[in-house]
Amino acid sequence: MVSKTEVRGVAEQVGAKGHARDVPLRYECASIVTALWLEITWSVLFLVVAAWRIAVPLDEFGNSTDAARHSAYFNAANFTAIGLLGLGCVFWPVLSSWRESRRTTTTTTTNAEEDPQPRPVCFDEVVVSGRSLRVLPCRSLNNTERSLRKLAAGATLRASMRSVRLQSARDEEAPALKEGGKMRTPMKSLGRAADDDKPLKGGTNYLSNLRSLLIFLVVTFHIVDVLSDNVSAYLGCLSAASGAGAYHTTFWTGARWFVTTLNRFWMSVFFLISALFCPKSLDKKGFRGFVLGKIVRLGGPFLIYSSFLAPLLWMGLKEYAKHRLLPDNMLMALVGMAGANADTITQLLEFRYLYAQGPTWFILWLLNFTVAYAVIAQFTKPARIPFPHPFLLMVLGLGLGGVFYSVRAAVHGTGYDHFGDMNRWEFGLAEYLPAFAAGVVGGRNRWLAGVEKMDAWVVWTLRAIVLGFWVIFFCDLAQYWEVAAGALRLDSELLACLTPPVYTVPVTLVILHAWSRWFNTTSPSKITRAVWETSYAAYANQTLFYMPLFVAYVEILKAAGVNVLGEALNFATTTKRADPLVEGCIWGAFFFVTITTHLLLWPCAYGIRSLPVLRRMY
Image (cartoon, rainbow, N blue to C red):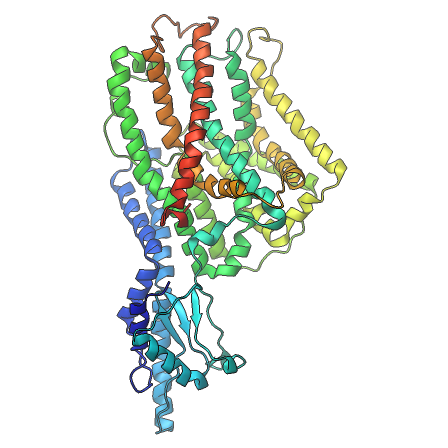
């Protein structure tokens, strides 16, 4: 909606006698600020957070190591670049208009010296609230003046489009204005950021279904990972050591297999799906609209969580740990398992407002990748590469396995594997970046059609390969069973270093092909569309639900008289069978936290996305 006051102000620029006057620069800036206030807000906040990262170069736990400081400074440089780029895109029309006005003034002065009879200047473009109100042919000037006078006199203009064009029917075929000997065509209007990722239509609805399912699994993954990798070990249900004689619960094997099979490929699928539609979006919106849309759509949720919600969440959890766990010696037992000392506990529980990215690391790096692609696309031609044979892609996966192994050997355990908020750089360089690049090239060259039409024998071969990887992952976990001690000898570290990229290629192809055949909804229902639209908000805010629910479950156990971290458990032994009650508590935690999280998260995410401003971001 374009307000009457804004249009009246523009109309007054024409003047009472029909001669056009230049729109003041301050009015043009004000109109842009009014229209693009959200883009400006997030761009400025990126600069503010950059200054915060420089002033407080600590990680979310309050550590001040060299790796933490260097990562904070990299964040500052990254956020500064995004903020400046966003502000530059916002005010680019002002800068370009200023340059054009100088050139037009020079040309008008020259023409006036040659022709003493001044001619009425025809308006080329009038900016209304950052959008375009265009009057193109000179012979439509009278109609335009009449329309603008009516608007200035109090008429109301209702606009449902982002670009309003006043042009009479008899002038539709009039040529565009010439400038500098070249035909000038109207600029594309700036699209809203919320339109950046609308629900997919037609034959690619299966990608929306797949994305929503993966986000559902992401939330479940984080819950299972906490229970199987941390909590159950600290409860004494798992041995802190691994090897012969170690006993694991019935929950542990299935949980770790679930975590392993997903963790080694699924974030690559997210990057791939997101990149598939970047070329089309960039072509449609142009560089300015594309970048501003990504800053709102990706930068907004990232800043909300990492700079506001996550710090408050961690402060609350620390206070809970100090007042509810320390009196029962529970936290001392938990931290003691990790080899920490009293100073580490004090530093960990210090009440401080600290930056914490959490699951939104993916959103930050998706923003980095998309902006980098938009910049590179301005200087390169689109690559025309047909869909490679799936087995050729698997060979490429073998090469990326070498990259993964090399990067892991260089940064693992140094503190730099999460440098710049990247979730492990071996995955970032060997999986995430290649997956995003493949998505960009595939989106430009219709690789999805090639995936959907793979030969049956190729599909079944890929399925067999994926099944083989699943069996290997299970055997790697089963070798630590008490009954299987010594029967299996697999190098878990070597598998963790070599399998991710090699496994990612076939499982991604198999999943995309399966979803295109069996889960490609032709007429999605309202509930299905609501799930598509809600999944992004659910991903960005998941931690706000399952972490407090873990706390609630611990309180339920304590109220029931269960000694959650009792001194009777021997944490040092590697052969003690877990107590059935404690093992039952782990299963209870899984069902309670998982079910309750999803029941609360998705409706709340839908409500968040329905709010007036947040609907443009989520």
